[in-house]
Image (cartoon, rainbow, N blue to C red; front, side, top):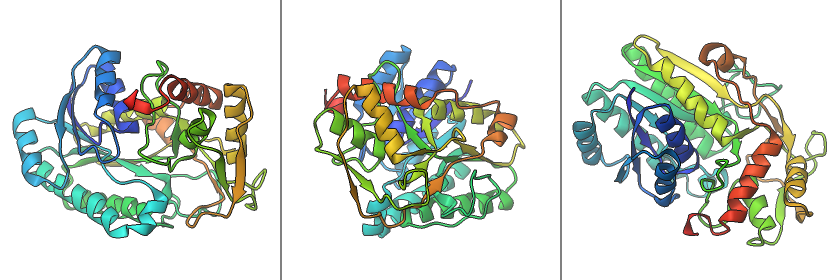
Length: 338
């Protein structure tokens, strides 16, 4: 079993992945600057698994801290989540996104190379497909980006690809996530955004719990089943298990691998609101507002490759995603502050 550095490990996807890694027998070391997360998530991870996590508070741009970690912890693999990730915000403060996401990752890769740790799973995104002409989306689709956040993911994929071509001793996995939602079945680990949520489901659950007044639906004139945007929603636990499955691609000489992690099924914004209303047992108020810059109509994955090569398939459906998200939100209305 491996010693794994999880950057951004206190965040939503990172913390759920820590649970799956520990339950698979791996040792977990987390680095996070806590800019958009809460260290209390790791206490929950430890409680759920009965195992300890080594935690360092700091930034991936801090080369000296990274060296200390690699010196002390004998890291085998890195799962790299750390980064800013709000599409709308990225258009307002693009330099912060380029500095944090790109400079930070390059810094991390340099230190990894110095310590001979050349195994990395990178948290990419379906945003690298830009506005796809058709669906479902395969890993071979042309790449582009419609916002600065997406451009940082696309640039980092290119940087990692260039790195691999320059030195074939690297083993690199690029995981292109679709839309993670849901929470751990315990209801004690979930998505806890700072301030107003940027993603749909935590916004919907915060309306349902009374923290927010109504859901803003950005546009109802897309060419979709009901005019609202269609996305491939994947349960965060399925996504976390995808990272554990991807570790097998970090064996020597496995090279550069790319996988979509999604369900292969699209749901519209209104379909999600309807499912959450059924879960909660009452209507969730919403209002149609103008389209959001950078949004696209439809995006869902073809996931055969991950199934074939990783033996991984998403198994949890939309009802389970909504049930688990609501269990977390209703049990902890203030998130980890509860």
